[in-house]
Image (tube, rainbow, N blue to C red; front, top):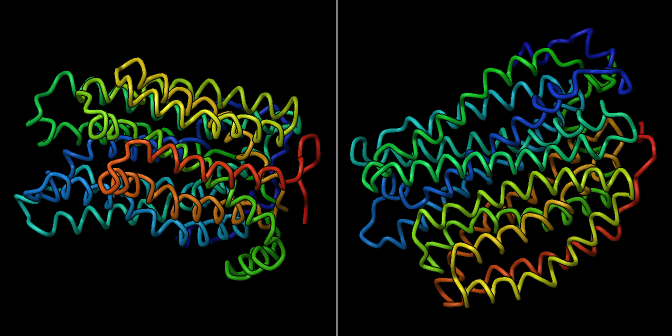
Length: 440
């Protein structure tokens, strides 16, 4: 940590946003953490039943699943702390050291989860280690999106900020697609007993193979923030105080807009479990949902970034979100009346396409509305709190609601309420297309 806090002369000479940098390498390095998060969490969701049996055995399979899903959400409790601490660190020390810290902590958390022995071998130490790993991951992930997205926005030319930032959303789709392919392959190759014993561990370890390359590229990135001696001397608490007192309305609107995107994303992540438990589809069929979800997220997120650069942030945020609010109930109603592979893929694809179009514009509009000195901390804080309160609880809430109410349409109602709130927040956000990034 002291190495990160040490003054680096390179941090005082930010990269020229108009320079011809190796764009592919920069994008890969910046979206790696977000992609790793979604690969990890998607894999955890795919194998929630198997993980529940491994670490949380119970005579009632519903209780075992609920505990497993709840553990999935435990990591979200440390996200706000990570968003506050690492986001502020990125604003007073630089984007690059913050991104190096988060990727290292993420990798450690994933490794702990993948290698922890089962409950049958080490007893209650197993769930304790698993919960600890989720908490560590949550802390790192809370501080990942703010610095990485701020970096993309700052290094991009003014007319390409949407396209570069949209890769953050597209990377989620790539992670979903990859995790879906891995999960689909393992589900077809392994027997249920082998899947519970070690199959899901292989899926997690495969995700870690990209970490060394990501760390190497991040080390070689230039700094984009103007880190002066005065800003280096400021504490993280002072950065956060300036954010909360000087920019409360942009922060609130960002939180609500990200909340709507988060809920639709995590309902999409829930579709595998939903297909198995509510629609009673076989696991090999259910696990194909992320394949179409990932593919449509990649395509429509990149399309959303391009449209946001061409037509503006606000219209691309609003129109897809409004259509999703209107279409989601009929889609779930049709899915439940005609449950099959085709209708599952159609519903998942619809959610992913419309949600990704809107989210791509949101992810660039939020940092563009904040000055550089609080940009990373502002986005990290809004993102971390929105994902903690709504992303971390979505799967548990939906599992509980469906179980208690016996209403398989609960996910649609949840998305409608959050979508309406998101539309209001997005309508109140300023248009930032074509405007220079705000200074201090």
